[in-house]
Length: 177
Image (cartoon, rainbow, N blue to C red; front, top):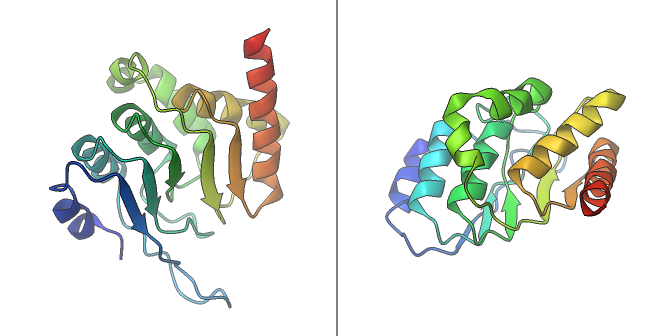
């Protein structure tokens, strides 16, 4: 299980560059339950304690959407782990639009948003569900680019993430003009 009891002892390894918890929540038949029990605060503490991380795989994101982390946990990862090249993490997408809007408005994120970010180009979303309308794709792409300025791809098993990736490329193209 990926929870705070897992995260606490790992934080003593300050020079750790690869963290791979390669577990799946469900078997091939879809049996099982989400084992990701970290929250945004746990993830922030982990990122702050392990600034050398280049590769983070905190289990393979599943389809349950029951975890306590939100897309807001990605900003501290991007800021504190500036060498990050690969990321796979569960986060709840139920309120992703509101969560992304809150990141840009919430005062606790203002300082983080002013700091340099990692150069992550691909986010592993694996089986995470996402339900968006047409305007939601742009909002998610804009919010993800705000967190990961070099993001080009959200790699997953759902077509909706391909649409987000298409919008990321559109945002990138507009930024270069």
